[in-house]
Image (cartoon, rainbow, N blue to C red; front, side, top):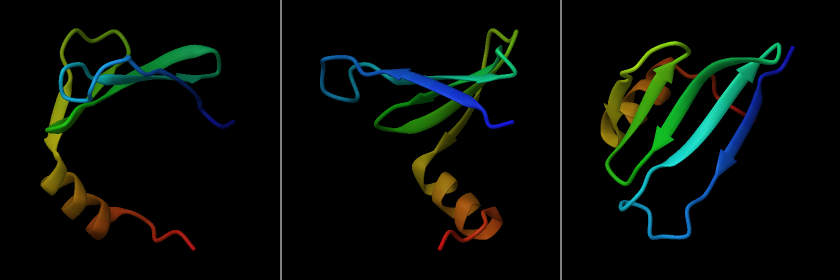
Length: 70
């Protein structure tokens, strides 16, 4: 089953406030992805703190580990 992803966009310039994507799987919270001007943060379900990666490292990770989309 595909994940359900919901998001809300604040009415401010990005950088002042993260954009948060709420990700659900089988109608249960899977985690939250926070996108900011400087980084991405993944907060798994039932966790208080997340895992942060900067945009440069994210680019390197996706280029090396991601599957190329046609």
